[in-house]
Image (cartoon, rainbow, N blue to C red; front, top):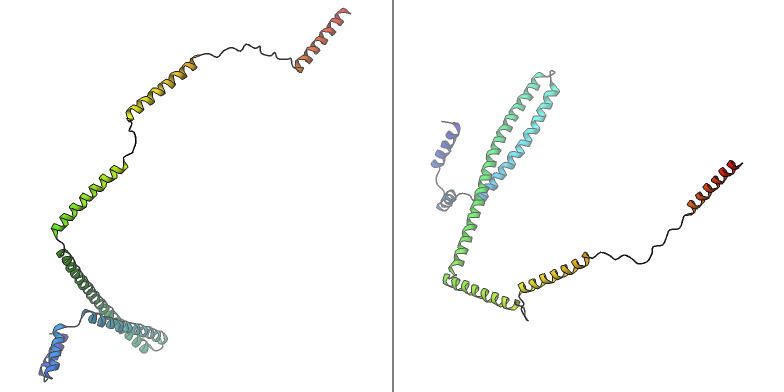
Length: 238
């Protein structure tokens, strides 16, 4: 038998050997043990335990740093004091590891309680909504719904007929095919008329074109050639 089971067994035997208190207090304690704490109360208790263990962690971490400082200070000068400081540091580190495991367990249990509380609240609200929907449906008559939908359909058809009647144009109505045929004939006539004009050649103008006057450069060049010929003739005559 483990030490924990022996402890609980001894506490239960001692509590059974004690005289019972008044009937009112016993009934209240039985009622509390039977109903148990609420989820929110349990969550608050777990948070308090987490805060206490977190403070314990901070204390142990500070003690570990102190023991390390003591061990460094003594060193080989006071070997016994240094070793004692290291032993205390090891014990504090073991306690830190145990607290980390305990905090993980508490955190897991707290999250499970919070999720259970949330799910319970969600289920409760869903039940309220289901009852509300059921109450609304009880006030609705299916025969009235069919009649209402038929009335709505009929009114929509009437509104469509009115809209079609209003949108019809007034005055004479013309056949669009006849208008298109007439437009095609007009385009054909316009094409034939343009072909008549494009088939004729342009007439020759009766007026004479003005002759171009010799330029100043060609006149001077002619004079130079004449002078050169006169010089050749004078040389030959002499």
